[in-house]
Length: 312
Ligand code: 3HC
Image (cartoon, rainbow, N blue to C red; front, side):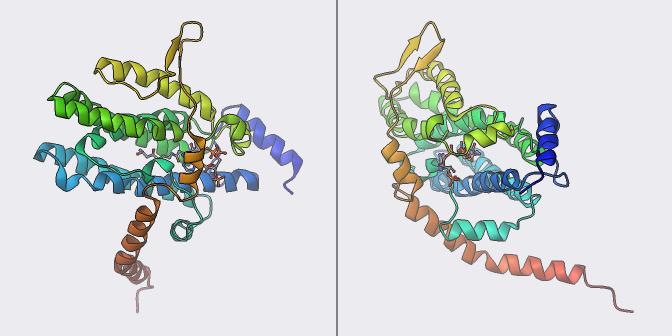
């Protein structure tokens, strides 16, 4: 058990708005929670490359292909930042990746849905990266220094991701009738899964209370989800697209867009590995890890050679 006095001093530091750094004392629970959250975030970034990667060779123009390539590469970089942030807590990324590949670690449910048309690339940038920005802007204020600093850099790139997506959506929404139908179909498929990215309701969130007490999260799952809906409805209206929710209505008193209940049965099925694309995503990650083995071995051999004491 950690000394009660140390915990009080730790929590007083957080109350004063101080950042907790890797070498600072922290409760073991705080460290374990951060490893869980940051590693799953990193896994999500890398798995998140797969749905969009599926459309790189199908981009409608060289310009669209260049933008999508840049975005997918950014996601790989986000994964690397976040594995580095997790490693400041005394774990090794090989252990974290091993947990993912063994099916013992989660990644975001959103990446277990198929990308069927080019419109999906626009809608993912607009809705999925848009949801990520709402979440990550909050995490940029997290009490753990390395995580909050990684978020600041990532949020800058996410804003580009969202803008390029929304530009694709706007272009298709005012394009041919077939393009408008295609982008509306993509919105219909990605809207609910995007709401699920924020996690279960606060009342069903076993981690939130502790994460909020220690200001890793400064807003709850439901608060962030509501903020995302409030931002997104006017954006959909601006390009003449309909969000697939008959219960969507504006509440003048609260200033919120109220929305219908999420299909939590689907959510938990996807989180437990039974979503439309879970098996394909994990197979792709396992194959990539196996194919990349020689790169890791070469890098490790080079690092050993460089750190060998000079003879003579
Ligand atoms: N997908 C998969 N698992 C989810 C989930 C989701 N959308 N939402 C919640 N869960 C899991 C949690 O991991 C937890 O399981 P665990 O205890 O075994 O880890 C369980 O469901 C209960 O959820 P809680 O609300 O108690 O969990 P958290 O307090 O950790 O909240 C979270 C969940 C909101 C995802 C939070 O962990 C978080 O903010 N994580 C950091 C951000 C992140 O991971 N985003 C993922 C998307 S990455 C991305 O957007 C890339 C961008 O480029 C598109």
